[in-house]
Length: 279
Ligand SMILES: Cc1ncc(C[n+]2csc(CCOP(=O)(O)OP(=O)(O)O)c2C)c(N)n1
Image (cartoon, rainbow, N blue to C red):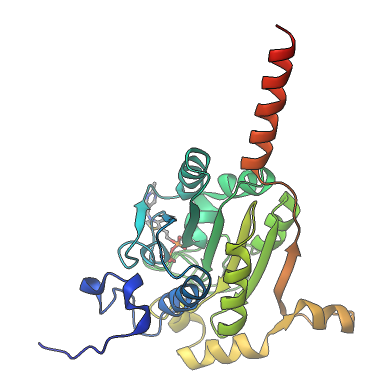
């Protein structure tokens, strides 16, 4: 089967040999990639100083194999410790984790909380599609109460976790949540977060069109309508004094505490000075 593919200005960031990509039709993953690549292109113009780390799952396939960059596709749940290691050994690099909610919050949840607490200098982009998409659509910590998954056919008896809130509380320098409909805001968040130090976390609500959407929304349009009608920007919620029972989106935290790299460098020079003056 032959197909015609037209070149695109962002092609230089992609391994065009793996295009058409591996995601399901209507999946939000590649529109997240698109917003991210626009941000990188406008601020940096190349992937020269980037390293991407991902775990296991569909979202983890955004950078690897699609990005023409240095990428590490590591064990399920472990992209964050690997990324921190890369950053501490190479402080000049931009280290970005792109992975799913199952990878980062279920099996990898402990790493996420402590990376935020340590204000480790990495950007984590979490695609929240409300279930484990790759393995058939099982229950995740992010699955809303009552939602149908392959392991909760009569509805989820548990309550979902608000990941952005936890990461904000744990100490991250930047936390934002958007949906794939918020392309401009997403691009701006990526641009801002890429230029900050410390731990930066961007959650993106995204449709899993093969698993979660058919079981809970019927079709893609319904979940996109849901995103449109049932999200409220934090600034609007603060003005109104109510979230109106909606999912809160927007920028939750912007602060400039020293990141882990700077903290360690400062500590090292203090320790060296103390050692020198003691001799
Ligand atoms: C140690 C281990 N446990 C379980 C799995 C099976 N597994 C592969 S991907 C995945 C979950 C992926 O979900 P998520 O991170 O939300 O990504 P999505 O596919 O939804 O984008 C699981 C449980 C595995 N690969 N390794």
